[in-house]
Amino acid sequence: MPTLNRILLIAPTEMTRTPAFDRAQALACATGALLHMVAFDYVQALAVAGLFDHDAMARARE
Image (tube, rainbow, N blue to C red; front, side, top):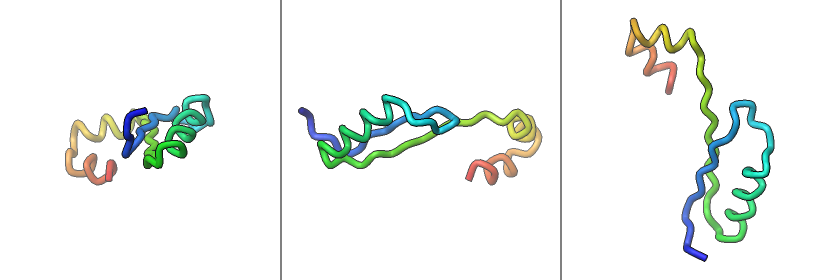
């Protein structure tokens, strides 16, 4: 098995537990790797606001 330092799990927006989550957790435990999770969400209002005020959009992302 290759040496893993980090594992990235792209989770559903609802953050529901999936088989992928269980597998990523098992791999992280077996290899000692860090498990990072990210969930992307799209908000129409923020997308439109970003067209007019790029600084406000950058602050919202942070």
